[in-house]
Structure formats: structure tokens, C-alpha cells
Amino acid sequence: MSRPRALVVEDSPEFMLLCRHLLEKEGFDVVVATDGRGAVQQAQQERPELAILDLGLPDVDGIEVCRQIRQFTDAYIVMVTGRTDELDKIVGLSVGADDYVTKPFSPRELAARIQAMRRRPRTPATAAGTPPREFGPLRIDPDVREVTLDGEVLELTKIEFGILDLLSSAPRRTFTRGQLLEDVWGDNWYGDDHIIDVHVGNLRKKLGESASAPRHIRTLRGVGYRFEP
Image 1 (cartoon, rainbow, N blue to C red):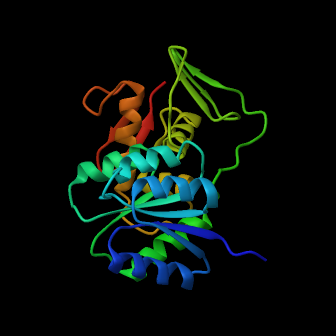
Image 2: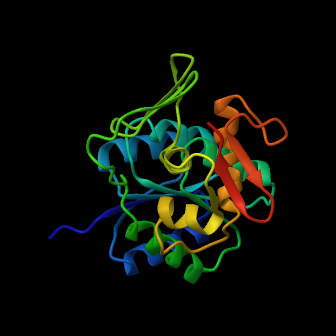
Image 3: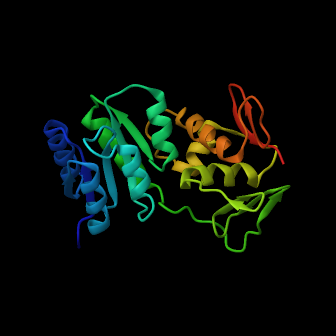
């Protein structure tokens, strides 16, 4: 039985070796790239199940690499950054990253995050024959996993779609962060549950709304979120 492949994109030899050793212990065959162009080529050729992607690369930055990779692969992507700026994390998640870690990171923590991601289905199952939901100009089609607003298809990440799908399945019902994590990420999520807030913020922007002026996604402070039809 062939081993799954992982791609490590890192220009620091120290972190490259750390990630490579960790992933090999987790059962992966590892391929590496030290710059953005090489990363996209390796991802196209090797079709990895998982990519560890450094944000600060010498040519094309990690955000652009993530965006390009997402056009042709459904691999799990963990972004690595040496900066603590929350904006980096928000942008990374908005272009399709599944998770992020900040250098210096604990190999044990990264391993736990990878294990948790792999335990949840990459493409969540949806009940066959679920009719589209329409809320004015917003249309959500669970069967084809497509969302349109005013007739225009919205480019949502899988996580953003999962959040919107769950919230809109029960309008006016309040879902806690824990419930959203369990449904969208799976019950093996390892990390800060406030990652939900980042994805909801990205989703709101694509829906043309904000926390201060919500149209469909309302925040219940200290509780969670609900969908307003």
C-alpha cells in the first residue's frame, strides 16, 4: 500500500528538516520545495494529501502559492508564519488554508493538528436530494456545494461553505463555536475555537456584510452565531 505524500515548502533548512522528520514519522512520503514556483510545480506533479506552507518565501509569497495550489488540489494546507500579525492568518485562511501555526512551534502540536485534520472528511457528506435554499438574492445549493448572490457565484472555501451550509440549514437557530467546529471540522479539532471567528469574518465579506451591519449572519456575543433569513 502506497504511503500518502506531503509537501513541505520552507526556505529555512532548520524548519525544513523539522517538518520532514515529523511528517515521515506520521507515515508520509515527503517532497520539498524552497520557493513558491517550485512549490506549485511540486504540488501539480505529486498531488500531495498535505502541504506545510511557509508564508515568507523568497520569490512568490505563501499567500499566492496557497491561492494557486487551491485551484487544482484539495490537499490539507497548514500555513506557517514567523509573524504574529493576525492579518496574515486571516488572509491565509481566506485563500484556502485549513490551519496555521506560528514559529517557533511545537512539533507535537503540529502533529496533533495534522492528525485532527486527517480524521475529518475532506469533502463533507451531504444528504442526497437536498433542495437549494433561497433567501432573497442569496441561493445555497448543498448538493452541488454552490452559493450565488444576485446571480453571481461566490468563491467560498470548503470551510466557509460548511459554516454557511450549517447555519442556513436551521434559520434563527443559534450555533455555538463548539457546534460549528464539530460539524465543519469534526470532533477531533485541535486548536483555538476562535478560528471560527476568522472564517465567519471572511464569509461575511464575501456575502457583502459585516459584524456591525449583518444581513444574514448574526453574532450572539459569548454564545455563537445564527442565520437570519
